[in-house]
Image (cartoon, rainbow, N blue to C red; front, side, top):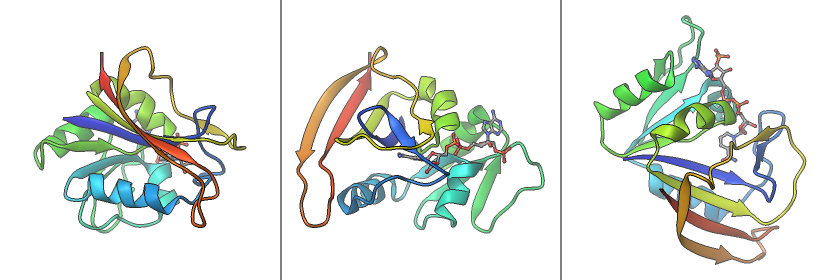
Length: 160
Ligand SMILES: NC(=O)c1ccc[n+]([C@@H]2O[C@H](COP(=O)([O-])OP(=O)(O)OC[C@H]3O[C@@H](n4cnc5c(N)ncnc54)[C@H](OP(=O)(O)O)[C@@H]3O)[C@@H](O)[C@H]2O)c1
């Protein structure tokens, strides 16, 4: 099973200046819980934004740069190769961004784990459209509280 996991605002914005736009501890905890123990596939820019290999997961980074490498990271030259590498490790695979890799990877995905952030933010990177090809299967809402400056929904989708 290949799952795309992403958080976006009301306009499907996911980032700006190669950074996330919000700090939502519950979302980070959910990301960790879902992805731990499984391979995660990401673009080189997202990896640079995180700045390190995420622990307890096989980190696969896609780049065109044949010289690029980083400790504890598997490097791939494209999405299909990255998926093959991940398949050799585990049957549950997560595509974790960013926009370029979501766009190239979404057609391989049966499931989406989307965090719908309730606000409208400013940034430069958007998630590709997905609502024509996936249907909502569950939704869990979280309101603003002392640790979350904006409300959000965890929404699961399955391929139509
Ligand atoms: N909100 C969220 O859930 C979420 C999640 C992840 C990321 N983000 C945000 O998304 C932004 C980054 O997204 P992005 O679209 O700019 O970058 P990205 O998808 O993370 O990485 C793009 C890079 O991937 C490599 N690449 C892409 N297509 C390739 C191909 N076909 N073959 C080989 N390599 C390929 C290239 O690396 P090289 O240039 O090295 O060749 C390219 O520059 C950041 O703002 C980040 O914070 C948000």
